[in-house]
Image (cartoon, rainbow, N blue to C red; front, side):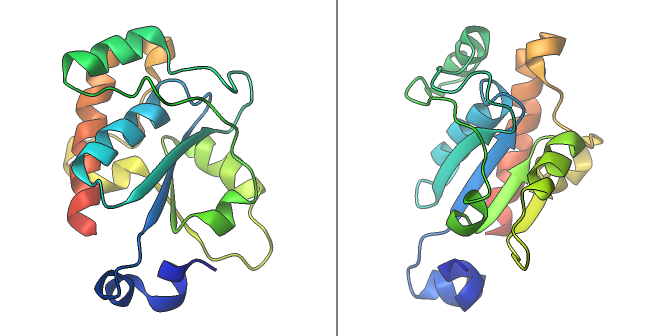
Length: 161
């Protein structure tokens, strides 16, 4: 159990405990590193990380076209490297955010028995977007559209903290 879970969010904030949020997508080269990069700009006091449910890209930087689109908006996350989500992440993070329903299902398969870490869809934080998932720009090629939605979700998440 993390400090935020043990103390409750409001009490943890008062005591100066740093919240830990993990962003998760499929390969950890487009959506989740973008979400991490955008959110760490909005909330530098929150400890963030990102991971993928698949291990194809472990150790690789975010996808070049995604980085280019983000850099054009002032986000530099070239320092990030892909890693695979694991069951231990449930103990390390207070909140785990998936980019789509398939990510959530793959995350939940690894949940340790009895673990209570909150897992949410990123689009839960942008209900006005009309989107239920963050589309994968690796396949759609719509990097700017993905960033628009990620920024909206990140602002919504920040507002809830």
